[in-house]
Image (cartoon, rainbow, N blue to C red; front, top):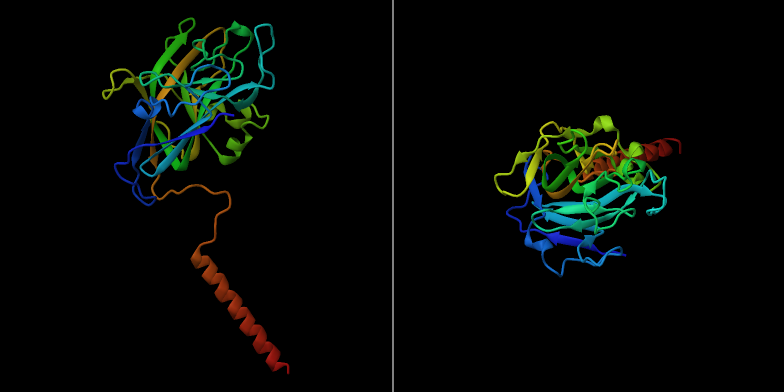
Length: 288
């Protein structure tokens, strides 16, 4: 089983949960991922660059990144003809260096093939089948995504010269459905996905581009990043993820399924019980 890797980035300051909205950026082109003691050997390749998950903390917010794809229930091979598996299961993150970023390799793919080792909706079988890869970004607090950095991208198809890139916020319930037999259509609605096909040059890095997410207004702990459609008519895209910027909502905290009672609420309940007990005691004495 692959190990879980945690990388702690240098902190310029610690963001308070009650502070005003602050943008935080997690970048994947730093020395944390170049060090050989960070790489972990994987199960499907001789490469030492695949991960089960990556966790990074910046400005007091932890972001955990995992890979997913609708590549189940059957592992496919070159002789299969019906490969639209449909069920979403975990995949592997592959790091391809500071100029490229992270790709996804699912259980129908090989890390030695391109663009299969990227985040893609590609299939070597052409129109017969394809798997839709997604990266799940899970944060310790509710955030709104502001920007996604792309280190490498490729588009293919008739007139398809733009990356069909999208992000969508999902709930804890939808997150828990991943890996439990659900399809992507069970986890999110395509209508809810924010789509952006216009990249911007990144002035801070001459290699990568970024996609501004100005139209995203939702807040969540869990965000899916990928392509917003399955491959159709042999039109496919692929990219590698190099960074993400998110904004912490004012006053937000980590979401819990069952809110814990506050000390004030406990105090109020205690006063109510004391009053009821005293009242009962008084009624008992009057009847004696």
